Image (cartoon, rainbow, N blue to C red; front, side, top):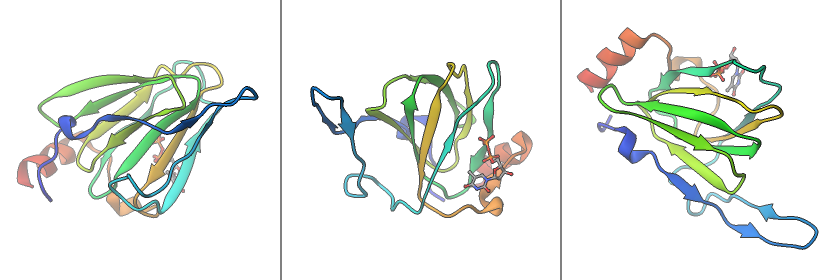
Length: 138
Ligand code: TYD
């Protein structure tokens, strides 16, 4: 795996179609650095709860606050940053090899995730020590 760091993770402004009856944002593979193989979303997250707490070996993701807001902590083993997502027309690209935690969910928040691969438990690194070895050996 090519070394990745949090500076490869950035927020993209998505296309927005304005209408007096509301706005519409769409996402297509074109313009994304990965094919969309899976979509999932987190919702009904209780106040104070935290999700994530893992890294992926190969998975790319685009994370969107489809409703409400939350914070995403990105950690590449050397650098950390926290990004607040609070608009449905911003998408945070998270590349492989990044430890992430998602927290500070607002009431009613929906965390929509577009992913580059089907669900694969073997792609997860859930132990921080294993993550440390993974990034330093890759
Ligand atoms: P997980 O990715 O650990 O959630 P989070 O990082 O948000 O805390 O997934 C939680 C559970 O849901 C886990 O048992 C696996 C299952 N799951 C699927 O079956 N398919 C999926 O696409 C995802 C993302 C999770």
